[in-house]
Length: 484
Image (cartoon, rainbow, N blue to C red; front, side):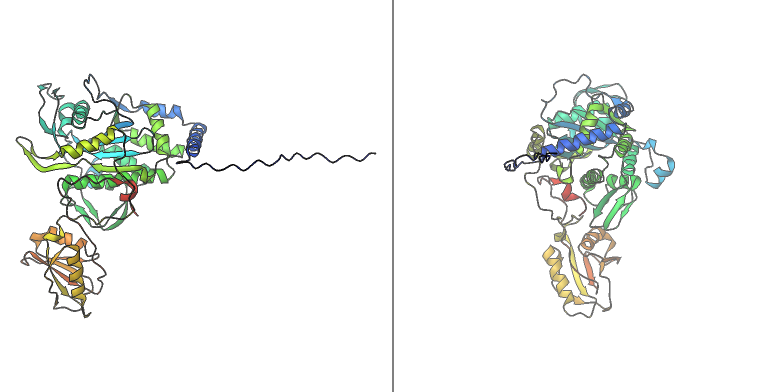
């Protein structure tokens, strides 16, 4: 038999090398991830049909009914996120445990504009203080039915007078930002959401204690579940900054919540995504246009988010304690700075101009170091320790005597901050600069606080006083305010 000829090679000639193309962002990877997510959702049987069923459970409101002369629509999506004092859905045991007693005020506890960029790659959150001075448009009181002309109110009172519609109209009138969707969350929904994501990690450099809400956190990192998380975001008396400090904590909490949701696989796991969505939507109210397509769209967009994709700020305040007859003390916005902020939202521009290095700023305290008088004593046998502590405190801004002395007791281990109870806020501010220091009340000591340095002294930590009025509002990204 003739020899069988060898098979012809099927190897193709090598292709010429393709020069890699540099891209700003791997769009194909994002599309592939989104497609994969949709396939996973569909294969699990909880895709569009399940979200539709969840959509049917949302309580609906019509905040845009008969609204005229509204601001011009911008780019991206603007959601007015409102937190209401809905404690009536929480059982008596939890109400006592988390100090939610009393009757609901039928007002807004939290007001934020959440802007989602047109390319769905950035979310900007602007907090509007509940005590902001506002002027309502003409409206009908939803309780009495009485017709009202426009009149001054605190911003959170617009909800009590005219519900979601007057709240939206008032916010649009003040900001000239068109609101596309309205989402109302109550206490119960908030607690359920935090629990279903497994809790949220927050950090604090100084003790946080509020006798009104029961908040009591030591310095460090904590994972807060539903009720404790509610205490954290509601506390107004944990420091001297009142509502402004509370909004900062709310922003830090939201940043950590975004980090938890995007890093834990919740948004890629269809079962977890369903559970979270059910928890959120089970007791919220939304406008009629916020439906299935919007939920899926936002869910897919959030899968590409990271903490650095989010940015947070508070509307700039021009006048603190602006008193209005019949209303009381309000916060008046800075007209030029607030207009600049809301113009950025309308134009779909980032609020932060450039990425910042991850450097933790000095924590703010109730009383500025420049207002605190300090006498340093050396409570050890270590020569020169008193001078070292005095110099470090002075460098941070504290008004030290510059003449440290030896303490009567030279065997002190833990550094002590001795103070007259009348200057307790100053004492807490000083203690925040001395990690591990012990506070000791000494009635009659007077306005000069005493620091008795012990052998466990390590450093003086820089601290800052309350944010000055009129200062340009700080814009921070989620990765800058979360835990390290």
